[in-house]
Image (tube, rainbow, N blue to C red):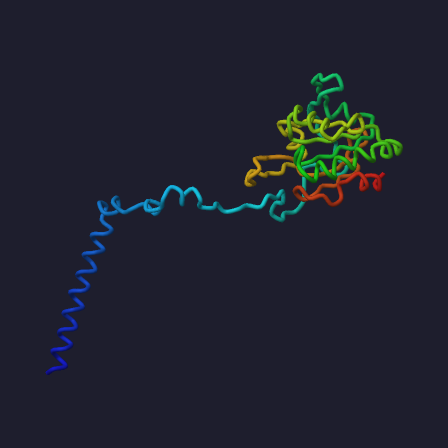
Amino acid sequence: MATSLTFSKFLSSAAVAATSTAAVKSSLFSPKSLHSLPHPLKNLSLRHRLLAKPATTKLSLSTKATPVSAAISVGDKLPDATLSYFDAAGELQTITVSDLTSNKTAILFAVPGAFTPTCSQKHLPGFVEKSAELKSKGVDTVACISVNDAFVMRAWKENLGINDEVLLLSDGNGVFTKAIGCELDLSDKPMGLGVRSRRYALLAENGVVKVLNLEEGGAFTFSGAEDMLKAL
């Protein structure tokens, strides 16, 4: 009998507790109550909110591992496009890819961006240093192409003290870069680069691609001046 009464009291207490819990949940999660809940930052002082440290992000030009491919390949004719640059007198000039390569042996190499570390410290300086040697082996034109505007390309040239060893060309709207399928989408990076060009170096004879060293993303492994000298 005592056991029956105790069990009955237990059931009664459990029912009351369940009813109370349901009432509390109903009260807390009603539309009216939700609007009155405090904001997580409400009880923090302004000083503590301002001192909260944001997550740090490492800068990188690398992209997800994907097969390195392009619309252009060895044996193809280069598509025509208009590029721009400032001449020695400070006048803005335009030149077509056809003018650069027709009846000529030309080396065109591309960088992801002017003033970026690898491009400024290794890729472009390497071609400047080896330009005379390249031309002694029959190369008529050595040109650097970047998806930057002509003003940035001029400032970069002046900053590095380049004369006429290498022609720095602006593909500002990425027309040529897209035509050969070498876009590099860096829109997810925090540097604000947007869509640029993959790094590459190509050798063209009379506008036809003879050598194409296309890097994965912004990597710099086999598209330098030394690599092109070996290909000549």
